[in-house]
Amino acid sequence: MNAPSYTPEQKMQFLFALRSRGLTDARVLNAMEAVDRAQFVQDGVFKDRAYEDMPLPIACGQTISQPSVVGLMTQALDLGPRHHVLEIGTGSGYQGAILSHLARRVFTVDRHKRLVDDARATFEALDLRNITAVTADGSRGLPDQAPFDRIIVTAAAEDPPGPLLAQLKIGGIMVVPCGQAETVQTLVKVVRGEDGFDYTELRDVRFVPLLEGVSRD
Ligand code: SAH
Image (cartoon, helix red, strand yellow):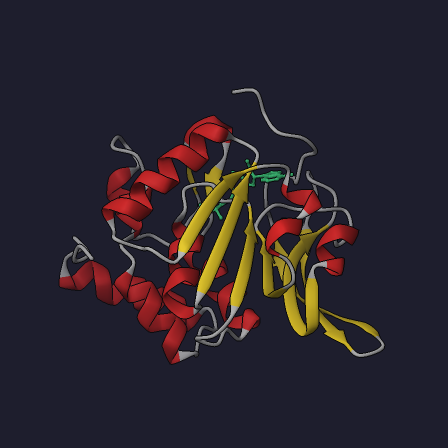
């Protein structure tokens, strides 16, 4: 894979910001060090802000999430090297690339074909072979590939979508931002037990909404 293009100073600041926001899992920190965020930001005014801990605009009016939020969501998933993972909300592909470093197989779904095509090209350029990007309505999950050990939703739902809960293995974990689109949302961790689901609220977050249906642009 291509070496990250940041300077040693930018790299130090990037990792410092992650740690100071509560990222402690060394595997997640290593994956985030290995995946160059600049590769997921289009050329233009925002490219040189790729290593700052802030969300940035991407195509189709969407955003690439803030690195510390990506890190904390990944940490909450407690990924293992054998895991079969589903991400809803491919966006730029940045979160998916980090998942691909930590799991065996990753499926990532977005409702915008253009974002899926761009992310697929980036995964190929970075030689990430265990991640597949699909254009679909992710609120229905990916029944053909289910069940999953881990599910991560990177758009805000009012409640954890039923089809996604149904596609989670027993013992599996899902993280999903919940709440109305324009207000503060709560990141919820769902653990599926033998007899039902256990919900824990992790922190406030702000994501674009999970919309129904596939987009035409
Ligand atoms: N994880 C991304 C950021 C996601 S932004 C990254 O690392 O860059 C949220 C994404 O969710 C947007 O790209 C949006 O198109 C997508 N989205 C919203 N509703 C969706 C749905 N029902 N199915 C699939 N993707 C959806």
